[in-house]
Length: 294
Image (cartoon, rainbow, N blue to C red):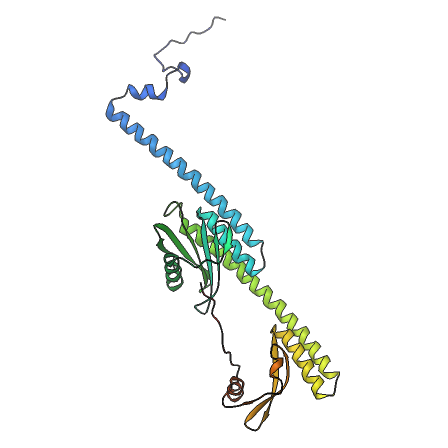
């Protein structure tokens, strides 16, 4: 059977004819060529943005997974600071933990290590703003951008994570990424607190049971008092303790241990002492409490 011949109706040559895009653009009128070049530039910019977005999301996923694997509170805070700096592409990050609105602790990550250097005033201002408003806050530290976001647990603000020294003031939705990472850390911190509380209650129950057995094993007052002190310091995790008995208008230290041992035998007035005020108020009294500084 004879073959069928398909006539050539002037179809365009395949790309393999050696003509490059630049040559094709050169044949266009200047105004059309400018439009095509602008479209190409926009396409390339979108492609680069998509690549940065994918890389940022990958870092976020890795950071969230790393934080979720940690169960100890201090380790969670360190991991949050480290991964926040990596996520933002910044040399420094800080995580501030709050308790009833006051600073409980802070961890600074700079140059790949934990540091105790004080915060720059610009970073401190952004941290304070995020803690006060519950929203992301921006600042400036010697010309470098600062971003701080709150660490939320339900309706409470547990702390603030801030990054500083980024190359860009707002790389791909950094506030959203950092808030997501902070939410992951808040969940991990909540779980760590629950686990720690459960372990603490179990240890206290065991220690109280041991204290009851120890006190029941002796009938001599001095021995009972010192057994009580030893187990009480173990339960409370303190460096020392003492027991006082009321003697008229004075309190007599009848037993003391640890750093309080030198006070044994001392008499102190009920009206002029912290122990006396606590006894009269019938409630615990804390003195010389130190609030951690940033």
